[in-house]
Length: 634
Ligand code: DMJ
Image (tube, rainbow, N blue to C red; front, side):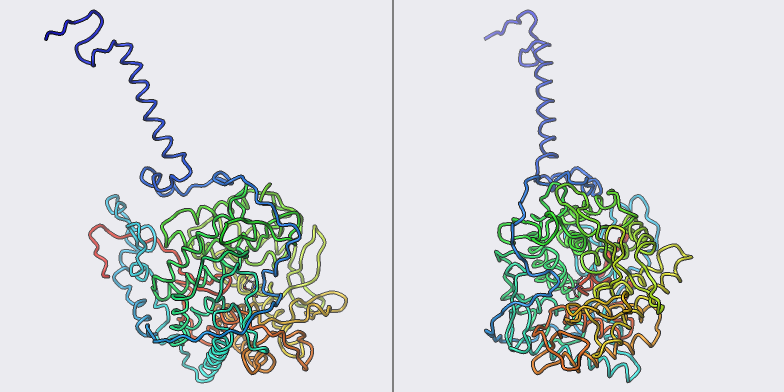
């Protein structure tokens, strides 16, 4: 059959006219644009984006841009147990026995962290264009999966030091052994009477669950993993690990404090992973991190304080003004979330906390200060209460630690920290008539001359920040850190028990003493000892070790009971009344900081590690360059 050529129709082009071809091409290009658009704008396109965009482009975020604008209303009248472990609740005494076998020895685990010589050269080598193509961008990992072995090679020093940080001086070593004994005593009693519960009630010899962790159990176990490990209590560590393996159930359906779950559980699991390389801890940390993400679904991306771990519904604390979120809570996620992104290779965690950072950086601050309450809906401050103690504290801590943990690359965190410090010095730092330096609280311009025990962490914080501010301010910051730590020590020495009250005042003739009955309690908190530890490492002034030892003696005398350690209700009386609670942070922080205080500086060296606010060590995220020809010894 012969096809006849029709006028105006070409033989090629499937017999279409020129104008028809043009319309067809136009349609085709529209279709292609639509497909690409979909890749970039569909909500779940992060992975696809990674194929097309460079890493920095993927991680760029804008305030509130990717957030779900649906509102989760605040639960009216819902009374939560306070997030700082202050309100005891009932627990039960059911015990669980486990068969166990040590699976990792201290020495085996320690060996992994030692050899880094072959990386030292490449660290200082300039990067060529071809090398850039094979650059490792975090912890030496050039592929998507995080490599623990490569991470270890990025450490500058052996994690546990040459001899687990054992000090040469016999008296110091004896003191360190005493702290280890305290840890074993606290742990053994927890295991005996409260195994699997969140805390031990040492007087009634049972467990406490409470409602801070949304039905999660074993807070004392998770908080203890790294302390047991660095102390070389390996049978105990292996019991803890086995519990995580067999009994840590993350599928709970309760209402949790986002902040507490993050600092204790996510922080504890991350540390355990980075210290031991056990994949179990990594996968649990990431699994739990994922459950926290719905709390960020607010118009601004500022998370709400309470989240149901099962449904993902979140709301604000009933006691927080006008449905606000708390600075110390949403400002204390950064370190853990950066590491969740490192380990999972999922940018979402870092995006969430960078979004918080951006908003806080942008927003206007009264006198340069950060108030404690912010609306997650409008992104505005709700009222003007400023504190370095409760409700504000660890936000400032995480600014300087974010900078240090980024290998000093996170310039925004650095700038925000030092600017905040200037404002704090100008508005809050005071000198008492007796010459004690303290941090007052600020209520819309009016000073409340009170310092909380929680605020005593700031001695250590200002100390570790001294090196990286303006060089001419280095000595000034070290002096300020020493003065604050001295004041906090005074709050201990001026009490009858030599333990410090929950809050002390500098008015009506008071100087570092509690004037209200309700401020006289001590719940085994770590902050004062934490500052001793930092100041010891920074100055090696022996007084900090002596002060730490005074605290050990006081803890032994007043807080040690037959079956564990307990908080006390009044630090000003020798006839102590116990609160029947061994807080999990006593195991995680108080005893760990004491142990580090009496150890050599090479145990968890500051060159490689920063501590989260629950004293869980997290490694500095180091970007290193691997030349294309370099082979990494694994
Ligand atoms: C700990 O859970 C953390 O240190 C937190 O930042 C505030 N306080 C308690 C211990 O006092």
